[in-house]
Image (cartoon, rainbow, N blue to C red; front, side):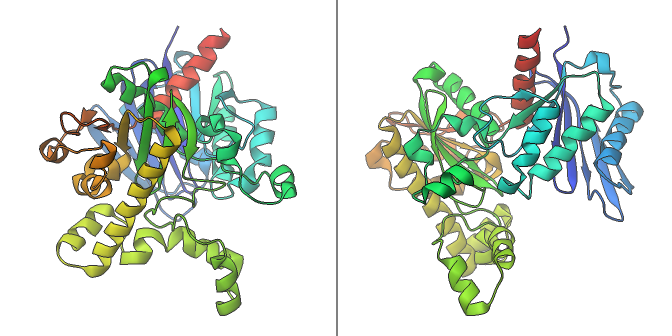
Length: 399
């Protein structure tokens, strides 16, 4: 019985893929097709430590996946449908309907389409990726893994907004949360590093990248998270505002005459670190801040302060905390951010070790001081492996 899974992540104009063993996580090849639908696209196929890049026009998602399969044939390893246990798909929004990965069928496709209003920027592309893969691999089980699924364990008081009942019941207005696939992987790995059963481990996990969120995880189950109905709520992000007064929409509409679409676009694309400093790359932001750029310094401080607030809030929500866990590109690589975010929390038992924190490393590690009541961990995430693992569990469980 094969354990090999092809993982697909279809974005608005890109397709990411990885072929890997769902049990061990060992990847045989990976790649990205970018600028789908534009005049010129790029395909990069990575195998055996080498990148093979070509410029080509990619008309649509079917063309993108066919191009990726051609890259497998040219550069290896060749993919035979009989050798695949499953094709695993990242799907952003499953609403309150999916708490587990699901085998793709006509009913699943129809339901994902019904949920498009909850994620109009993401679900349409995910849906197209599902349909294309079903056409090209009709004999291989397809499994949808939802970003929102991990957070379906939140208690009602944590996911409920104080809005009219009709909004909640008829229009599904509630907190859903995202980055769930990452949280599932990181929570399990953190428990391993702490040498604790995941069922007995309480964590505040910080997924910090261009998109950023926080989660309170009790016993491997989400009990609260910072993103809400959409991925706009919560922490400051690369180009997204995070938390803000909801009346800002009405104020901008009245004062500037902006449409809701214009306001949404500004909050998603022109806010966050970019809005504060002009850049959304955290490495460049840090460099500018250290060089004396006042706007960059303010952006860094706002970002770190928002993280620190959520750590304190989720510590309170959990009642008992075993570790604060940093993951994502910023969380994993920025020692300065970890220091800034946790400074002043020693009274809560959270104490960094400067040497450990500054030491370069690529694997999961402890960066808190000896004697710190709450551990601080850096855990690289691997969402593709988690998708493959969950897809494998579904199809092998059905055997």
